[in-house]
Length: 286
Length: 242
Ligand SMILES: Nc1ncnc2c1ncn2[C@@H]1O[C@H](COP(=O)(O)OP(=O)(O)OP(=O)(O)O)[C@@H](O)[C@H]1O
Ligand SMILES: [Mg+2]
Image (cartoon, rainbow over all chains, first blue to last red; front, top):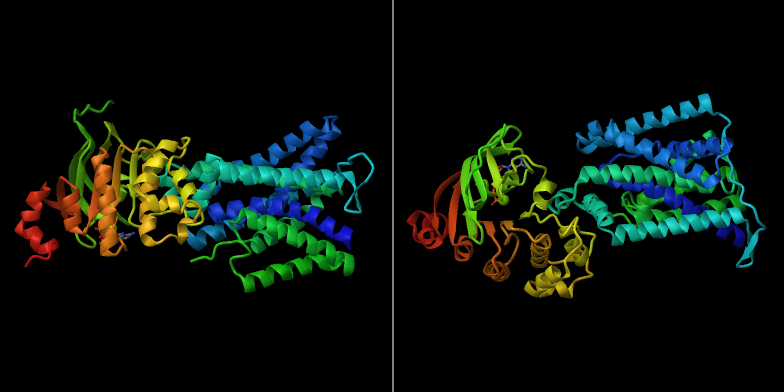
Protein backbone atom coordinates (compact mmCIF):
# COMPACT_ATOMS: atom_id res chain seq x y z
CA UNK A 1 0.00 0.00 0.00
CA UNK A 2 2.74 2.43 1.02
CA UNK A 3 4.79 1.43 -1.99
CA UNK A 4 1.76 1.78 -4.27
CA UNK A 5 1.30 5.30 -2.90
CA UNK A 6 4.91 6.25 -3.49
CA UNK A 7 4.85 4.64 -6.93
CA UNK A 8 1.74 6.64 -7.67
CA UNK A 9 3.45 9.89 -6.78
CA UNK A 10 6.45 9.05 -8.95
CA UNK A 11 4.18 8.16 -11.83
CA UNK A 12 1.89 11.10 -11.16
CA UNK A 13 4.66 13.66 -11.37
CA UNK A 14 5.42 12.35 -14.83
CA UNK A 15 1.74 12.41 -15.78
CA UNK A 16 1.75 16.01 -14.60
CA UNK A 17 4.61 16.91 -16.88
CA UNK A 18 2.83 15.19 -19.75
CA UNK A 19 -0.32 17.20 -19.03
CA UNK A 20 1.56 20.50 -18.72
CA UNK A 21 2.67 20.34 -22.34
CA UNK A 22 -0.86 19.71 -23.54
CA UNK A 23 -2.48 22.26 -21.27
CA UNK A 24 -0.08 25.06 -22.26
CA UNK A 25 -0.78 24.66 -25.96
CA UNK A 26 -4.50 24.48 -25.35
CA UNK A 27 -4.51 27.53 -23.09
CA UNK A 28 -2.53 29.52 -25.61
CA UNK A 29 -4.13 28.50 -28.89
CA UNK A 30 -7.23 26.41 -28.26
CA UNK A 31 -5.54 23.52 -30.07
CA UNK A 32 -5.98 20.18 -28.32
CA UNK A 33 -2.83 18.29 -29.21
CA UNK A 34 -4.07 14.77 -29.86
CA UNK A 35 -0.59 13.80 -31.05
CA UNK A 36 1.06 14.55 -27.71
CA UNK A 37 1.78 10.92 -26.85
CA UNK A 38 2.99 10.16 -30.36
CA UNK A 39 5.43 13.05 -30.20
CA UNK A 40 6.65 11.85 -26.80
CA UNK A 41 7.27 8.30 -28.04
CA UNK A 42 8.89 9.53 -31.25
CA UNK A 43 11.53 11.21 -29.09
CA UNK A 44 12.10 8.02 -27.12
CA UNK A 45 12.46 5.98 -30.32
CA UNK A 46 15.05 8.44 -31.61
CA UNK A 47 16.99 8.08 -28.33
CA UNK A 48 16.86 4.30 -28.65
CA UNK A 49 18.04 4.35 -32.27
CA UNK A 50 20.90 6.72 -31.49
CA UNK A 51 21.99 4.66 -28.51
CA UNK A 52 21.87 1.64 -30.80
CA UNK A 53 24.55 3.30 -32.93
CA UNK A 54 26.76 3.56 -29.84
CA UNK A 55 26.04 7.15 -28.87
CA UNK A 56 26.16 7.66 -25.08
CA UNK A 57 22.84 8.09 -23.28
CA UNK A 58 23.00 11.81 -22.47
CA UNK A 59 23.66 13.16 -25.97
CA UNK A 60 21.19 10.63 -27.39
CA UNK A 61 18.52 11.85 -24.97
CA UNK A 62 19.20 15.49 -25.80
CA UNK A 63 18.87 14.71 -29.49
CA UNK A 64 15.62 12.82 -28.89
CA UNK A 65 14.14 15.74 -26.95
CA UNK A 66 15.24 18.09 -29.72
CA UNK A 67 13.39 15.98 -32.29
CA UNK A 68 10.19 15.98 -30.22
CA UNK A 69 10.46 19.75 -29.78
CA UNK A 70 11.30 20.36 -33.42
CA UNK A 71 8.26 18.45 -34.70
CA UNK A 72 5.82 20.62 -32.75
CA UNK A 73 7.78 23.77 -33.49
CA UNK A 74 7.68 23.02 -37.21
CA UNK A 75 3.93 22.40 -37.02
CA UNK A 76 3.41 25.76 -35.33
CA UNK A 77 5.36 27.52 -38.04
CA UNK A 78 3.57 25.79 -40.91
CA UNK A 79 0.09 24.26 -40.96
CA UNK A 80 -0.94 25.73 -37.60
CA UNK A 81 -0.90 29.18 -39.21
CA UNK A 82 -4.11 28.20 -40.99
CA UNK A 83 -5.66 27.20 -37.68
CA UNK A 84 -4.70 30.49 -35.99
CA UNK A 85 -6.55 32.41 -38.66
CA UNK A 86 -9.81 30.80 -37.49
CA UNK A 87 -11.69 31.71 -34.37
CA UNK A 88 -13.87 30.03 -31.76
CA UNK A 89 -15.27 26.60 -32.48
CA UNK A 90 -13.83 26.41 -36.00
CA UNK A 91 -10.34 26.89 -34.60
CA UNK A 92 -10.81 24.22 -31.93
CA UNK A 93 -12.20 21.68 -34.38
CA UNK A 94 -9.64 22.37 -37.08
CA UNK A 95 -6.77 22.17 -34.58
CA UNK A 96 -8.13 18.94 -33.19
CA UNK A 97 -8.47 17.29 -36.59
CA UNK A 98 -5.06 18.44 -37.68
CA UNK A 99 -3.31 17.10 -34.59
CA UNK A 100 -5.28 13.87 -34.85
CA UNK A 101 -3.91 13.55 -38.38
CA UNK A 102 -0.38 14.22 -37.18
CA UNK A 103 -0.84 11.57 -34.51
CA UNK A 104 -1.96 9.01 -37.10
CA UNK A 105 0.99 9.87 -39.29
CA UNK A 106 3.48 9.34 -36.48
CA UNK A 107 1.73 6.12 -35.42
CA UNK A 108 1.80 4.91 -39.01
CA UNK A 109 5.43 5.83 -39.41
CA UNK A 110 6.43 4.03 -36.21
CA UNK A 111 4.38 0.94 -37.11
CA UNK A 112 5.95 0.88 -40.55
CA UNK A 113 9.60 1.55 -39.73
CA UNK A 114 10.11 0.87 -36.03
CA UNK A 115 7.34 -1.46 -34.82
CA UNK A 116 9.47 -3.14 -32.20
CA UNK A 117 11.95 -0.39 -31.37
CA UNK A 118 11.70 0.30 -27.65
CA UNK A 119 13.61 2.56 -25.31
CA UNK A 120 14.42 0.92 -21.99
CA UNK A 121 16.92 2.89 -20.00
CA UNK A 122 18.40 0.63 -17.37
CA UNK A 123 19.76 2.60 -14.48
CA UNK A 124 22.32 0.61 -12.52
CA UNK A 125 22.58 0.39 -8.74
CA UNK A 126 20.74 -1.30 -5.92
CA UNK A 127 17.28 -0.23 -4.85
CA UNK A 128 17.29 2.47 -2.18
CA UNK A 129 14.97 2.49 0.79
CA UNK A 130 12.81 5.60 1.13
CA UNK A 131 10.31 5.92 3.99
CA UNK A 132 10.63 2.21 4.45
CA UNK A 133 9.85 1.44 0.80
CA UNK A 134 12.48 0.05 -1.53
CA UNK A 135 12.59 2.09 -4.70
CA UNK A 136 14.57 1.24 -7.81
CA UNK A 137 17.24 3.69 -8.87
CA UNK A 138 15.40 4.08 -12.17
CA UNK A 139 12.26 5.28 -10.50
CA UNK A 140 14.24 7.58 -8.20
CA UNK A 141 16.12 9.13 -11.10
CA UNK A 142 12.88 9.54 -13.05
CA UNK A 143 11.30 11.33 -10.09
CA UNK A 144 14.32 13.52 -9.52
CA UNK A 145 14.41 14.62 -13.16
CA UNK A 146 10.67 15.25 -13.17
CA UNK A 147 10.69 17.22 -9.92
CA UNK A 148 13.62 19.37 -11.01
CA UNK A 149 11.97 20.02 -14.38
CA UNK A 150 8.72 20.94 -12.63
CA UNK A 151 10.49 23.38 -10.33
CA UNK A 152 12.42 24.92 -13.20
CA UNK A 153 9.14 25.37 -15.08
CA UNK A 154 7.44 27.01 -12.12
CA UNK A 155 10.41 29.36 -11.66
CA UNK A 156 10.45 30.10 -15.37
CA UNK A 157 6.76 31.03 -15.45
CA UNK A 158 6.93 33.09 -12.25
CA UNK A 159 10.28 34.78 -12.43
CA UNK A 160 11.33 35.37 -16.00
CA UNK A 161 10.08 37.95 -18.38
CA UNK A 162 9.39 35.40 -21.15
CA UNK A 163 7.59 33.10 -18.69
CA UNK A 164 5.31 35.92 -17.58
CA UNK A 165 4.86 36.79 -21.24
CA UNK A 166 3.55 33.29 -21.94
CA UNK A 167 1.06 33.54 -19.07
CA UNK A 168 -0.02 36.99 -20.21
CA UNK A 169 -0.96 35.70 -23.68
CA UNK A 170 -2.96 32.86 -22.10
CA UNK A 171 -4.89 35.31 -19.92
CA UNK A 172 -5.45 38.21 -22.30
CA UNK A 173 -3.87 38.18 -25.71
CA UNK A 174 -4.76 41.78 -26.54
CA UNK A 175 -3.48 42.96 -23.17
CA UNK A 176 -0.26 41.08 -23.88
CA UNK A 177 0.15 42.76 -27.26
CA UNK A 178 -0.35 46.16 -25.66
CA UNK A 179 2.46 45.30 -23.24
CA UNK A 180 4.78 44.54 -26.17
CA UNK A 181 4.48 40.74 -26.06
CA UNK A 182 4.51 39.06 -29.48
CA UNK A 183 1.92 36.25 -29.29
CA UNK A 184 3.27 34.50 -32.40
CA UNK A 185 6.71 34.16 -30.83
CA UNK A 186 5.20 32.93 -27.56
CA UNK A 187 3.21 30.28 -29.46
CA UNK A 188 6.24 28.98 -31.32
CA UNK A 189 8.23 28.86 -28.11
CA UNK A 190 5.51 26.99 -26.22
CA UNK A 191 5.05 24.44 -29.02
CA UNK A 192 8.77 23.68 -28.90
CA UNK A 193 8.77 23.52 -25.10
CA UNK A 194 5.74 21.25 -25.06
CA UNK A 195 7.41 18.82 -27.47
CA UNK A 196 10.57 18.71 -25.38
CA UNK A 197 8.56 18.05 -22.20
CA UNK A 198 6.63 15.27 -23.94
CA UNK A 199 9.88 13.65 -25.05
CA UNK A 200 11.27 13.98 -21.54
CA UNK A 201 8.32 12.11 -20.05
CA UNK A 202 8.79 9.24 -22.50
CA UNK A 203 12.46 9.13 -21.55
CA UNK A 204 11.85 9.11 -17.79
CA UNK A 205 9.09 6.53 -18.14
CA UNK A 206 11.56 4.30 -19.97
CA UNK A 207 13.64 4.22 -16.78
CA UNK A 208 11.04 1.95 -15.19
CA UNK A 209 9.83 0.03 -18.24
CA UNK A 210 10.28 -0.04 -22.02
CA UNK A 211 8.57 2.62 -24.12
CA UNK A 212 7.73 2.11 -27.78
CA UNK A 213 5.14 2.48 -30.52
CA UNK A 214 2.39 0.80 -28.50
CA UNK A 215 2.52 3.50 -25.80
CA UNK A 216 1.55 6.45 -27.99
CA UNK A 217 -2.22 6.44 -27.55
CA UNK A 218 -2.19 5.81 -23.82
CA UNK A 219 0.21 8.76 -23.41
CA UNK A 220 -2.09 11.03 -25.39
CA UNK A 221 -5.12 9.89 -23.40
CA UNK A 222 -3.28 10.37 -20.10
CA UNK A 223 -2.15 13.86 -21.08
CA UNK A 224 -5.72 14.70 -21.99
CA UNK A 225 -7.14 13.35 -18.73
CA UNK A 226 -4.54 15.16 -16.66
CA UNK A 227 -5.10 18.44 -18.49
CA UNK A 228 -8.88 18.20 -18.15
CA UNK A 229 -8.80 17.30 -14.46
CA UNK A 230 -6.23 20.01 -13.73
CA UNK A 231 -8.12 22.62 -15.71
CA UNK A 232 -7.19 23.28 -19.34
CA UNK A 233 -4.62 26.07 -19.39
CA UNK A 234 -3.46 25.66 -15.80
CA UNK A 235 0.15 24.54 -15.24
CA UNK A 236 -0.08 24.02 -11.49
CA UNK A 237 -3.44 22.32 -12.01
CA UNK A 238 -1.82 19.81 -14.36
CA UNK A 239 0.82 18.89 -11.79
CA UNK A 240 -1.75 18.53 -9.02
CA UNK A 241 -4.00 16.42 -11.25
CA UNK A 242 -1.03 14.36 -12.41
CA UNK A 243 -0.07 13.40 -8.87
CA UNK A 244 -3.66 12.67 -7.84
CA UNK A 245 -4.27 10.54 -10.91
CA UNK A 246 -0.93 8.79 -10.55
CA UNK A 247 -1.90 7.75 -7.03
CA UNK A 248 -5.38 6.67 -8.14
CA UNK A 249 -3.75 4.72 -10.97
CA UNK A 250 -1.35 2.80 -8.71
CA UNK A 251 -3.87 2.21 -5.93
CA UNK A 252 -6.53 0.92 -8.28
CA UNK A 253 -4.15 -1.43 -10.03
CA UNK A 254 -2.87 -2.57 -6.61
CA UNK A 255 -6.32 -3.28 -5.17
CA UNK A 256 -8.37 -4.05 -8.27
CA UNK A 257 -6.22 -4.75 -11.29
CA UNK A 258 -4.33 -3.04 -14.05
CA UNK A 259 -7.07 -3.70 -16.59
CA UNK A 260 -9.41 -1.27 -14.84
CA UNK A 261 -7.10 1.69 -14.16
CA UNK A 262 -7.68 3.59 -17.40
CA UNK A 263 -11.44 3.29 -16.91
CA UNK A 264 -11.11 4.60 -13.37
CA UNK A 265 -8.98 7.52 -14.58
CA UNK A 266 -11.56 8.36 -17.23
CA UNK A 267 -14.29 8.24 -14.59
CA UNK A 268 -12.22 10.64 -12.45
CA UNK A 269 -11.95 13.01 -15.40
CA UNK A 270 -15.69 12.77 -16.10
CA UNK A 271 -16.56 13.39 -12.44
CA UNK A 272 -14.28 16.42 -12.37
CA UNK A 273 -15.94 17.87 -15.44
CA UNK A 274 -19.36 17.40 -13.86
CA UNK A 275 -18.36 18.76 -10.44
CA UNK A 276 -16.13 21.58 -11.63
CA UNK A 277 -16.20 22.15 -15.40
CA UNK A 278 -13.09 24.34 -15.28
CA UNK A 279 -11.01 21.60 -13.63
CA UNK A 280 -9.21 21.67 -10.29
CA UNK A 281 -7.32 24.91 -10.80
CA UNK A 282 -8.67 26.15 -14.12
CA UNK A 283 -10.38 29.49 -14.31
CA UNK A 284 -14.11 29.38 -14.80
CA UNK A 285 -14.89 30.27 -18.38
CA UNK A 286 -16.94 33.40 -18.57
CA UNK B 1 11.61 54.31 -52.80
CA UNK B 2 12.11 56.60 -49.84
CA UNK B 3 9.36 58.54 -48.27
CA UNK B 4 9.75 62.27 -48.10
CA UNK B 5 10.78 63.24 -44.59
CA UNK B 6 8.14 65.36 -42.99
CA UNK B 7 9.71 67.80 -40.60
CA UNK B 8 7.36 68.16 -37.71
CA UNK B 9 7.76 68.61 -33.98
CA UNK B 10 4.69 66.47 -33.35
CA UNK B 11 5.22 63.20 -31.49
CA UNK B 12 2.02 61.80 -33.02
CA UNK B 13 0.55 62.84 -36.32
CA UNK B 14 -2.47 61.20 -37.83
CA UNK B 15 -3.51 62.05 -41.37
CA UNK B 16 -6.51 61.01 -43.46
CA UNK B 17 -7.21 58.03 -41.22
CA UNK B 18 -10.30 55.94 -42.00
CA UNK B 19 -11.08 52.60 -40.36
CA UNK B 20 -13.90 50.36 -39.30
CA UNK B 21 -15.16 46.82 -38.95
CA UNK B 22 -15.91 44.11 -41.50
CA UNK B 23 -15.09 46.35 -44.40
CA UNK B 24 -17.27 49.23 -43.33
CA UNK B 25 -15.64 52.43 -42.12
CA UNK B 26 -16.90 54.03 -38.92
CA UNK B 27 -14.26 56.78 -38.71
CA UNK B 28 -13.45 58.93 -41.72
CA UNK B 29 -10.50 61.07 -42.73
CA UNK B 30 -9.27 61.80 -39.22
CA UNK B 31 -6.30 64.14 -38.94
CA UNK B 32 -4.66 65.58 -35.84
CA UNK B 33 -1.31 66.14 -34.21
CA UNK B 34 0.00 65.98 -30.69
CA UNK B 35 3.13 67.77 -29.52
CA UNK B 36 5.45 66.51 -26.87
CA UNK B 37 4.38 67.44 -23.34
CA UNK B 38 0.80 68.23 -24.34
CA UNK B 39 -2.43 66.86 -22.94
CA UNK B 40 -5.08 66.61 -25.65
CA UNK B 41 -8.63 65.32 -25.41
CA UNK B 42 -10.95 63.78 -27.96
CA UNK B 43 -14.54 64.20 -26.90
CA UNK B 44 -17.56 62.47 -28.32
CA UNK B 45 -20.67 60.61 -27.27
CA UNK B 46 -21.42 56.87 -27.37
CA UNK B 47 -20.56 55.31 -30.69
CA UNK B 48 -18.86 58.42 -32.06
CA UNK B 49 -15.73 56.43 -32.93
CA UNK B 50 -13.24 57.31 -30.16
CA UNK B 51 -12.24 53.72 -29.41
CA UNK B 52 -12.11 52.86 -33.10
CA UNK B 53 -9.69 55.74 -33.67
CA UNK B 54 -7.37 54.49 -30.92
CA UNK B 55 -7.59 50.92 -32.19
CA UNK B 56 -6.63 52.07 -35.66
CA UNK B 57 -3.66 54.03 -34.30
CA UNK B 58 -2.50 50.93 -32.39
CA UNK B 59 -3.00 48.62 -35.42
CA UNK B 60 -5.62 46.64 -33.56
CA UNK B 61 -7.65 47.36 -36.70
CA UNK B 62 -6.28 47.81 -40.19
CA UNK B 63 -7.08 51.30 -41.43
CA UNK B 64 -8.60 51.53 -44.89
CA UNK B 65 -6.79 54.80 -45.58
CA UNK B 66 -4.42 57.26 -43.97
CA UNK B 67 -1.18 57.27 -42.05
CA UNK B 68 -0.05 57.33 -38.45
CA UNK B 69 3.37 58.72 -37.61
CA UNK B 70 4.88 58.37 -34.17
CA UNK B 71 8.13 59.91 -33.04
CA UNK B 72 9.18 60.60 -36.62
CA UNK B 73 8.46 57.21 -38.17
CA UNK B 74 5.52 55.75 -40.03
CA UNK B 75 3.83 53.15 -37.83
CA UNK B 76 0.74 52.57 -39.97
CA UNK B 77 0.02 48.85 -39.97
CA UNK B 78 2.97 47.96 -37.73
CA UNK B 79 2.17 45.05 -35.39
CA UNK B 80 0.58 46.21 -32.13
CA UNK B 81 3.34 44.78 -29.93
CA UNK B 82 5.95 46.64 -31.96
CA UNK B 83 4.12 49.91 -31.61
CA UNK B 84 3.90 49.34 -27.87
CA UNK B 85 7.64 48.70 -27.70
CA UNK B 86 8.30 52.01 -29.47
CA UNK B 87 6.88 53.82 -26.45
CA UNK B 88 3.29 54.40 -27.53
CA UNK B 89 1.16 53.07 -24.70
CA UNK B 90 -2.59 52.55 -24.89
CA UNK B 91 -4.96 52.00 -21.99
CA UNK B 92 -8.20 50.68 -23.48
CA UNK B 93 -11.54 51.26 -21.79
CA UNK B 94 -11.78 47.48 -21.32
CA UNK B 95 -8.35 47.63 -19.64
CA UNK B 96 -7.22 44.17 -20.71
CA UNK B 97 -5.47 43.38 -17.43
CA UNK B 98 -4.22 39.87 -16.63
CA UNK B 99 -6.90 38.77 -14.15
CA UNK B 100 -5.05 35.81 -12.59
CA UNK B 101 -1.83 37.69 -12.04
CA UNK B 102 -0.94 39.84 -9.09
CA UNK B 103 -0.78 43.62 -9.24
CA UNK B 104 3.01 43.38 -9.21
CA UNK B 105 3.11 40.88 -12.07
CA UNK B 106 0.79 43.04 -14.15
CA UNK B 107 3.14 45.96 -13.58
CA UNK B 108 6.20 43.89 -14.45
CA UNK B 109 4.58 42.91 -17.75
CA UNK B 110 4.15 46.58 -18.52
CA UNK B 111 7.92 46.78 -18.83
CA UNK B 112 8.13 43.74 -21.16
CA UNK B 113 10.59 42.77 -22.60
CA UNK B 114 12.92 44.99 -20.57
CA UNK B 115 13.97 44.48 -16.99
CA UNK B 116 11.46 46.46 -14.94
CA UNK B 117 12.85 49.72 -13.59
CA UNK B 118 12.33 49.83 -9.79
CA UNK B 119 12.34 53.62 -9.85
CA UNK B 120 9.42 53.67 -12.30
CA UNK B 121 7.57 51.12 -10.19
CA UNK B 122 8.08 53.32 -7.13
CA UNK B 123 6.73 56.31 -9.00
CA UNK B 124 3.66 54.30 -10.03
CA UNK B 125 3.06 53.37 -6.39
CA UNK B 126 3.60 57.01 -5.51
CA UNK B 127 0.84 58.15 -7.88
CA UNK B 128 -1.41 55.20 -6.95
CA UNK B 129 -0.74 54.27 -3.30
CA UNK B 130 -3.73 51.91 -3.42
CA UNK B 131 -1.79 49.66 -5.78
CA UNK B 132 1.09 49.43 -3.33
CA UNK B 133 -1.35 48.19 -0.68
CA UNK B 134 -2.60 45.49 -3.03
CA UNK B 135 0.66 44.31 -4.58
CA UNK B 136 0.00 40.60 -4.13
CA UNK B 137 -3.72 40.65 -4.92
CA UNK B 138 -4.88 39.23 -8.26
CA UNK B 139 -5.88 41.92 -10.76
CA UNK B 140 -9.22 40.19 -11.35
CA UNK B 141 -10.24 40.78 -7.73
CA UNK B 142 -9.56 44.54 -7.70
CA UNK B 143 -12.36 47.10 -7.66
CA UNK B 144 -13.12 49.00 -10.86
CA UNK B 145 -11.22 52.06 -9.70
CA UNK B 146 -8.20 50.01 -8.68
CA UNK B 147 -8.24 48.18 -12.02
CA UNK B 148 -8.16 51.51 -13.80
CA UNK B 149 -5.18 52.58 -11.68
CA UNK B 150 -3.44 49.32 -12.50
CA UNK B 151 -4.11 49.70 -16.21
CA UNK B 152 -2.55 53.16 -16.18
CA UNK B 153 0.28 51.99 -13.93
CA UNK B 154 1.05 49.06 -16.21
CA UNK B 155 1.21 51.40 -19.20
CA UNK B 156 3.56 53.73 -17.31
CA UNK B 157 5.98 50.86 -16.60
CA UNK B 158 7.08 50.92 -20.24
CA UNK B 159 8.26 54.56 -19.84
CA UNK B 160 6.01 55.62 -22.71
CA UNK B 161 6.62 58.85 -24.57
CA UNK B 162 2.90 59.06 -25.33
CA UNK B 163 -0.05 57.64 -23.43
CA UNK B 164 -3.44 57.09 -25.08
CA UNK B 165 -6.31 56.68 -22.63
CA UNK B 166 -9.77 55.55 -23.65
CA UNK B 167 -12.45 56.75 -21.25
CA UNK B 168 -10.48 56.26 -18.05
CA UNK B 169 -13.63 56.91 -16.02
CA UNK B 170 -15.57 53.94 -17.45
CA UNK B 171 -17.53 52.31 -14.66
CA UNK B 172 -16.31 54.70 -11.97
CA UNK B 173 -18.54 56.62 -9.56
CA UNK B 174 -18.24 60.42 -9.94
CA UNK B 175 -15.98 60.79 -6.92
CA UNK B 176 -13.59 58.09 -8.21
CA UNK B 177 -13.68 59.59 -11.70
CA UNK B 178 -12.54 62.92 -10.30
CA UNK B 179 -9.82 61.15 -8.35
CA UNK B 180 -8.64 59.34 -11.50
CA UNK B 181 -8.37 62.68 -13.27
CA UNK B 182 -6.36 64.11 -10.39
CA UNK B 183 -3.81 61.35 -10.95
CA UNK B 184 -3.76 62.07 -14.68
CA UNK B 185 -3.21 65.78 -14.01
CA UNK B 186 -0.24 64.83 -11.90
CA UNK B 187 1.22 62.75 -14.72
CA UNK B 188 0.63 65.63 -17.12
CA UNK B 189 2.42 68.01 -14.75
CA UNK B 190 5.34 65.57 -14.65
CA UNK B 191 5.66 66.07 -18.39
CA UNK B 192 3.90 62.99 -19.79
CA UNK B 193 2.23 63.48 -23.18
CA UNK B 194 -1.42 62.40 -23.02
CA UNK B 195 -4.35 61.86 -25.37
CA UNK B 196 -7.61 61.14 -23.56
CA UNK B 197 -10.87 60.09 -25.20
CA UNK B 198 -13.79 61.00 -23.02
CA UNK B 199 -17.52 61.48 -22.66
CA UNK B 200 -17.09 63.15 -19.26
CA UNK B 201 -16.38 66.37 -21.04
CA UNK B 202 -15.90 68.74 -18.08
CA UNK B 203 -13.18 66.54 -16.57
CA UNK B 204 -11.46 66.09 -19.91
CA UNK B 205 -11.45 69.78 -20.79
CA UNK B 206 -10.01 70.62 -17.40
CA UNK B 207 -7.15 68.16 -17.90
CA UNK B 208 -6.31 68.93 -21.52
CA UNK B 209 -5.03 72.15 -22.99
CA UNK B 210 -6.92 71.56 -26.22
CA UNK B 211 -9.38 69.16 -27.72
CA UNK B 212 -11.14 67.76 -30.74
CA UNK B 213 -14.80 66.86 -31.02
CA UNK B 214 -15.61 63.60 -32.82
CA UNK B 215 -19.14 63.04 -34.04
CA UNK B 216 -20.39 60.15 -36.18
CA UNK B 217 -16.80 59.21 -37.02
CA UNK B 218 -15.66 62.67 -38.13
CA UNK B 219 -13.66 65.38 -36.44
CA UNK B 220 -15.53 68.66 -36.22
CA UNK B 221 -14.83 71.43 -33.77
CA UNK B 222 -11.39 71.74 -32.25
CA UNK B 223 -9.46 74.26 -30.23
CA UNK B 224 -8.14 75.24 -26.82
CA UNK B 225 -10.09 73.75 -23.93
CA UNK B 226 -11.47 77.09 -22.65
CA UNK B 227 -12.73 77.87 -26.11
CA UNK B 228 -14.46 74.49 -26.43
CA UNK B 229 -15.94 74.82 -22.95
CA UNK B 230 -17.38 78.19 -23.95
CA UNK B 231 -18.72 76.99 -27.29
CA UNK B 232 -22.55 76.91 -27.26
CA UNK B 233 -22.66 73.77 -29.40
CA UNK B 234 -20.34 71.88 -27.05
CA UNK B 235 -22.26 73.20 -24.06
CA UNK B 236 -25.52 71.95 -25.47
CA UNK B 237 -24.30 68.54 -26.62
CA UNK B 238 -21.81 67.58 -23.93
CA UNK B 239 -22.01 69.91 -20.94
CA UNK B 240 -25.72 69.70 -20.26
CA UNK B 241 -26.22 73.44 -20.67
CA UNK B 242 -29.63 74.21 -22.16
N1 LIG C 1 -16.07 45.30 -32.75
C1 LIG C 1 -16.94 46.00 -33.50
N2 LIG C 1 -17.54 45.45 -34.56
C2 LIG C 1 -18.41 46.14 -35.32
N3 LIG C 1 -18.73 47.43 -35.10
C3 LIG C 1 -18.18 48.05 -34.05
C4 LIG C 1 -17.24 47.37 -33.20
N4 LIG C 1 -16.83 48.23 -32.25
C5 LIG C 1 -17.48 49.39 -32.48
N5 LIG C 1 -18.29 49.29 -33.57
C6 LIG C 1 -19.13 50.37 -34.13
O1 LIG C 1 -18.29 51.43 -34.50
C7 LIG C 1 -18.88 52.67 -34.16
C8 LIG C 1 -17.91 53.48 -33.29
O2 LIG C 1 -17.73 52.78 -32.08
P1 LIG C 1 -16.64 53.15 -31.01
O3 LIG C 1 -16.59 52.04 -30.04
O4 LIG C 1 -15.41 53.52 -31.71
O5 LIG C 1 -17.29 54.44 -30.35
P2 LIG C 1 -16.85 55.21 -29.03
O6 LIG C 1 -16.79 56.63 -29.37
O7 LIG C 1 -15.65 54.59 -28.45
O8 LIG C 1 -18.11 54.95 -28.10
P3 LIG C 1 -18.16 54.72 -26.51
O9 LIG C 1 -18.06 56.07 -25.89
O10 LIG C 1 -19.52 54.12 -26.30
O11 LIG C 1 -17.06 53.83 -26.15
C9 LIG C 1 -20.19 52.35 -33.47
O12 LIG C 1 -21.21 52.51 -34.41
C10 LIG C 1 -20.06 50.90 -33.10
O13 LIG C 1 -21.29 50.25 -33.14
MG1 LIG D 1 -15.24 53.57 -26.70
